[in-house]
Amino acid sequence: MYYKEGMAILAILLTFAAFVPYIRLLLRNEIKPHYFSWMIWGFVTLTVCIAQLQDDGGVGAWPIGISGLITMVVVVLSLRHRKTITITRMDWAFLIIATSSLPVWMLTSDPLWAVIILTAVEVLGFGPSIRKAYYHPYEENVTFFVLFFIRNIVAVFALEHYSVTTMLFPLVASAACCFLIVTIVWRRTIVPKQQASSSSPSR
Image 1 (spheres, rainbow, N blue to C red):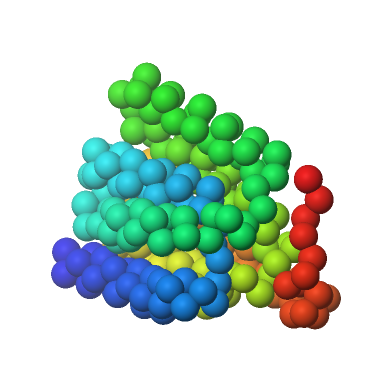
Image 2: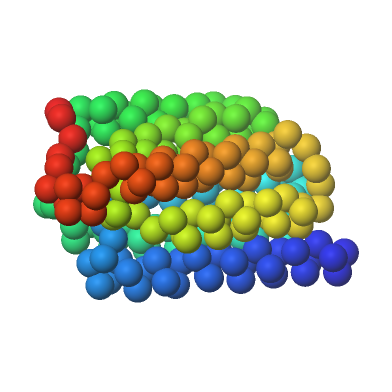
């Protein structure tokens, strides 16, 4: 039990280690997160935390819940950049598909199906950020997503009950973080910073 609690505390510390510098960069206008992605992530993360607790995830669900609460803070802060971030039809498509999937959570009493649906929504939430990272790779923070990848793995070890319900979300979120990290790093090797600042995605 102490091992699980230790892993949960470590995952929570990693959550703050990722978020605190990220929020500082956001307040200094050094990064411009896509608020569509963060709105989806915040709601989904909080809901998955509830589903994990229903399936006896125990202390392993704590880092997910705390992450969801802080994510909503990022949403509020990122709205200050809404006039400078291009919202494309594809972004709206991601948001509409994601939000239209959420009511299904209310139609099932099985936390497994809820987590499957919400994990799919989480992946959709990465869509706008991945598109934005492709065109503006310098407006995101790689370290943040590296720490979140590690945090999700640690959170899995903190789970008190292993099942598809408790493990699916953090493992898939880790894979999505990896894909976004690779996209950012790859694009930075191709696109000069000055060119990325002046380019804009096609609608």
